[in-house]
Image 1: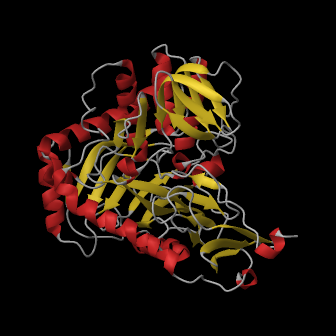
Image 2 (image 1 turned 180 degrees about the vertical axis):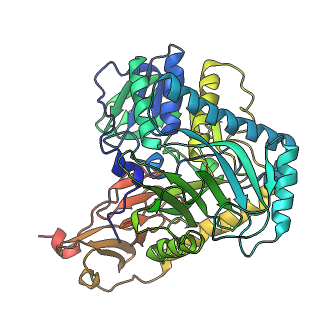
Amino acid sequence: MANTSSLWIATVPQRPEGHLVGRLECDVCVVGAGIAGLTTAFLLACEGKKVIVLESRPHVGEGETGVTTAHLASIIDDRFSTLKSERGIEVARLAYQAHSAAIDTIEAIARARNIDCDFVRVDGYLFPSTSDSPKTIDEEEQAAREAGVALERIEEVPLSQFRVGPCLRFPRQGQFHPLRYLSGLARAFTERGGELACGCHVDTVAGGAPCKVTLRDGRVVHAHAVVLATNSPIHSGVRVNSRIAPYTTYAFAAELPTGLIPRALYWDTEDPYHYVRLHTEPDQRGSEYVIVGGEDHKTGQAEDYVDRWRRLEDWARIRIPEMGAVNHRWSGQVFETLDGLALIGADPGGEENVYIATGDSGMGMTHGTIAGLVLRDVVLGRSNPWTELFDPKRMPIKSMDTVMSEGTNFAAQYKDWLTPGDIEKPEDVPPGRGAILRRGLTKVAVYRARDGAIHEMSAVCPHMGCVVHWNDGESTWDCPCHGSRFSAEGQCLHGPATEDLPSQQPAQEAAR
């Protein structure tokens, strides 16, 4: 399966772009034009700062913001009971307040700037999976109430064909069209005097006074501060990578007759959990889209990519039998942290005046907005109630088992250097597929296009030397260590890697 595309990208084909034409000096340089980068840039521009946003892709929103399901939730994905156990109830309370403020901020910006992004307040429902104990709901209810969360316990989730027992209803959650919002936010940023430059590939970032951001074309942007909002920091080393774990999550959109289920956000307690919402396009008559997500796994560590969408659809059809054909299917990356809260703040590697926003933990839209609220104040030298909460240098003591488990998983990926290839010669690869070939002491990623043309490139991720795996669901090469992703022909699509997979020729061809 290939040519997957999110509903959001399909319905907003034209999005803002820009070019770097002014002086290569600014107060703040933001790398990444997703929701975290543009929110940070817009809020700083509103404070009178000269801000340049650099985006490697041709348009805004072509990264992870474009493949979210765009739930706006103040309810922690990893649940308040878990956060209470790991960091205490006061941290859970602050996290709820921060995510609530993020939803309020999105609503306020959309209204003030007249951004038509389908923002609406909805209820959220947490319901038990068929295999889960009712005790899970009981524990979450108690922890959420202790954290000051507004909620109601009800007897059934409002899905007509699905009765699983008591669930929790959370009022004043939200949903929106993420790319319509991001397009409006980009325009608001440039109207405030900000400079947006798409198609600018950043190679290196060096902290200092000033910081230096070096582009692939050799130009250097000088800034008093740099914000890395690239989902996974492109300059990151062990200090960041040991705190985040990349997961791939799947989603689809299918048509549904209007009014069959209440417009709301729905999550279950399964691990990995499922999540559901609705969306209506202006030209739809008598129908809307139901968007369903789930089936997460460690990035680059699966062999059943296409089956993940099938299982997700099967799960949904049992609960929403009126659902029509699937119109769109896509996947995205989620970077989980040790405690389910993002890493937002000063670079833990010690780069002076460099700040990061990563570790969305399945809540990218609210965490990205929180990043803007926190980093604006940090850059301006102001206090913020959530600075310590999201400090990238934190290391929750009760999460040490997770640290050890993730470290073991990371180390295990290097065993790929010892295994034979998937194929013996390039011609063994079917058209439209990829496979790994061992050639002497190294490994080669071989992609055979549908027209039969064979493309060979190094199978070694340029970030930290892991061997990439072929993803037949999205036709990409995925790194199982830190989540870097590459196109079928080796172009870098997602960091922390910043370089493409180098092209490789067989020895006899190179000698010609």
